[in-house]
Image 1 (spheres, rainbow, N blue to C red):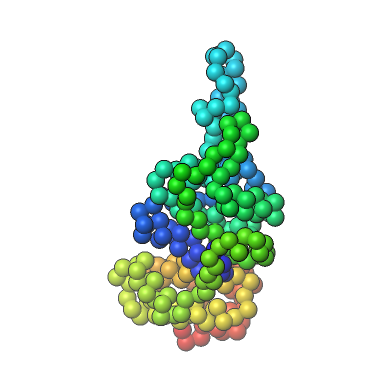
Image 2 (cartoon, rainbow, N blue to C red):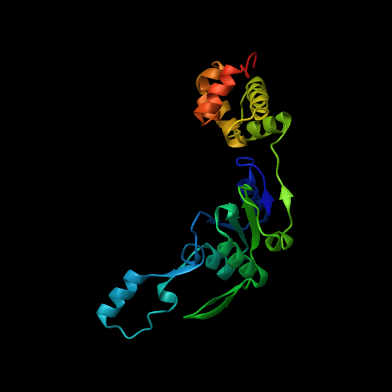
Length: 236
């Protein structure tokens, strides 16, 4: 389980993990109102209806008409899989409880087909932006890690990795400026992705004044006004 502010790279950990071990990445993006039909499986009702009209003598509820969603796809995979359950804090308590049951035994019951058990258990990464507290029962079953914003020096290394050839002075300037912004009380602090985008903007616009490009890194009008009023980037 990875927790941290939005934009610190939690999702990238799962992608890097899949790449490191040569596994396929399967991602379930959580959202408000997510249920079994979005996460586990559903039936292809239009094809079933056509099947009925054609009068073919074949069961309607069979593998042929099963729509596999990310969780079932991960359970039935025969190759190495990293299952990313992204932003679990966006889902409700009921879905979290179902997820706890599923991840305990790595099996699920489909009423029409029976029980599906994972032949090869996926490596599961769960991320949370901590917009709400998760149940202790789920946390107890996980290895927990908090990801904080990187130091300016570490962030500069990330910028160099993502933008090969970026001048040292541009990377340092952007990362130092982002560190200043994160020290302010803003509605939405910039993530690492915004830092990289800011460096790209400076390169494309041939090193403009940082305040002229605040819209690249800050996405709330009040935040931009606060930074300008307080002259947070003076001399940056």
